Image (cartoon, rainbow, N blue to C red; front, side, top):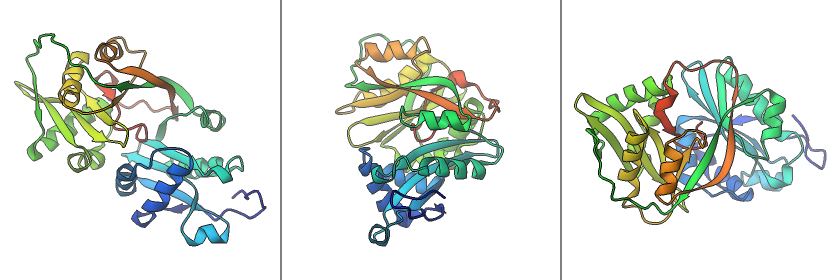
Length: 294
């Protein structure tokens, strides 16, 4: 492990647990991120969160973290990285690289994906990640339109009995098993809708609060029109700002979002480490659950 600015070695990377929730929240705030207590609680439950304690004694006593990173597994072959954070006072000392190398070793042969920030991308480039697409956060007050809906499908609130169909639809689109995460959506999200067709559930989407906005994600649907139908169902009665993360290079939904009052705010590369291509249908994946869960 590297050392801090005073030459004190950082403690070994350790697996964090629910008791570390306040320390994870404090680390987010330290870097100017939102506290996101609910999201951290979800990640500590369904993912593997690794952290390094602050090496100085006074901070270590109250559980201060020098850094943290999250590994979420989707079966044996696919995983994602999220919430890669190093405390401001411990930046540029090799701690971020040490955390990422630990995570990649834990991931084994799995292909690992992440949403990269401008600050983190140089490190990911050095570690061998490659850019596979782009993502933009479309935010604003959602404005419904008077355009008639000619769809043969309808949206409705999800019920407990729909979870098996949601998992099946998601696995066909995502190409890997996210059931552990999806099973938490009914309690994590404020709203969870399914897209009902004559032959069953063909898509779903969720909306969850994130301090300054309501995040809409995941969005899984058979096409862009159906994705827009789900987003509309979630956003129409939402007070305040809405956020949905979309691929700006896909032709239909970003333009649709702009017509409904949402504007791109930030552009991030999505990167991958490894060569496995999930055997899913990425054309049916319109928005992630969160940028912490690529």
